[in-house]
Picture 1 (cartoon, rainbow, N blue to C red):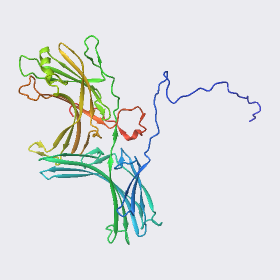
Picture 2 (cartoon, rainbow, N blue to C red):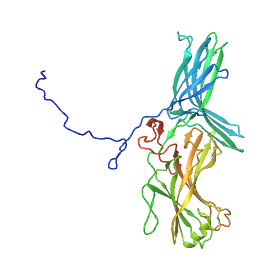
Picture 3 (cartoon, one colour):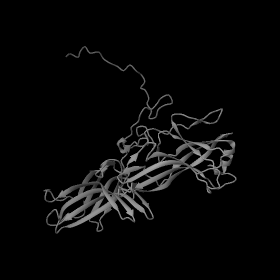
Picture 4 (cartoon, rainbow, N blue to C red):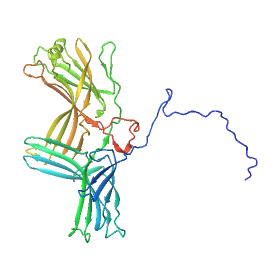
Length: 426
């Protein structure tokens, strides 16, 4: 093909367009995927004599224990100061769920994961044993107790003191074994084994599928809350003790998804409706301090955690053998939002305790559930104008807040699960 007749080209523009890393006021970011940030530190555990080291890669600096997430690879290296006489080097990761019932003496143990790899074996490998051997073992996403399959549960422990009581522990660990001797046999007769191990924390991350909604608006004319699909209303009645008084109708508004992050305050709104007489009688028992009760509060919004353990998983005389404990893991702060002749309104936020690191889960005989509770618990029920009231709503907690395409997190999408809205009857 001849090129003598091809036309010449010259750029027709005189100015190259400018670009910026962040969108301008008239632009909108549709999506952003940042590179996954991989921790650069190592966790090192040495044997007592210093001859064997277990090094685990991709850990944050100065951690007390290694941490791994959903479907993570446990990567590291086994280092030997002396390789003379070594016949085999192995690495193993394992996890266990142990449930023990106090008084009855029943104990149930489930293996959650068990992976083992031989890094070097004298009978198989023709080359001398290296001074450093790398390994990688991937954690499974699920486990089976022989009846059902469950997501691999996080590191967790909970105890109920007293009789009856229980202990529930979920633990994970990684170990390296160096075998020395004449021959490598199944029974390892006449061999010396040096094992170095460390527990690790399994911390699967999760986040809501949707963000928290915008705050509820209050009507300009009535000042009452304007209901939208972003918020769901839960209702209960606070019963008056005297027939001459009117019950108080209680409405608790929560974000409709009911999947919230432990790292973000959970917003809520409460409205109490009744006669002026009943509302006046209720004020000393309300969520705000009053002149009559300046240091006491009898109406609360809390996040409760119920830990249920069933060691025997059976029925005795038609009754289940499970036991449970309930802990308060978050307390709401109230703000007065408005009032009228027949109503009182409050808004607020619940902050989950910083010690809480994981959400609810189910693992065979251990079930951890979370709830929001609106309650009015008078100090002297017989003398109070209203009976005790509790309104309990199932929720799910996640480790991380909602984020669009991992923006600002620099974490791989595969490291997160997205819990669904819990059923009302959970």
